[in-house]
Length: 68
Image 1 (cartoon, rainbow, N blue to C red):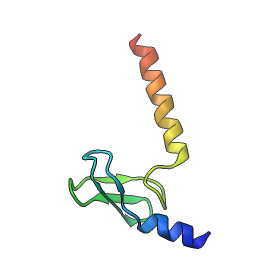
Image 2: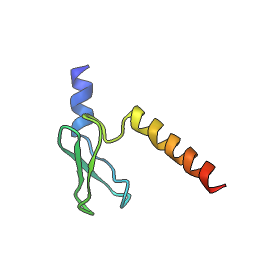
Image 3: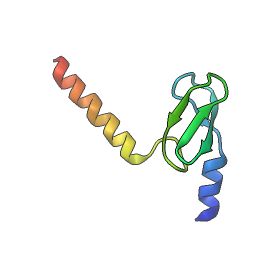
Image 4: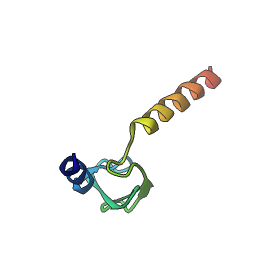
């Protein structure tokens, strides 16, 4: 289990802004893209958590309800 977390926290992920595989963990919950320079807050071991995905989908659904 520890090895799985260490591998996931040291891996590079796809940046949400530029689309490059350059998102790297700086500290616990702090992720920065080497290409575009954006810094985002995310999970401790991965940039996006399950709870964050749930919140994003709920916000999107509520926005669609307001627009229509």
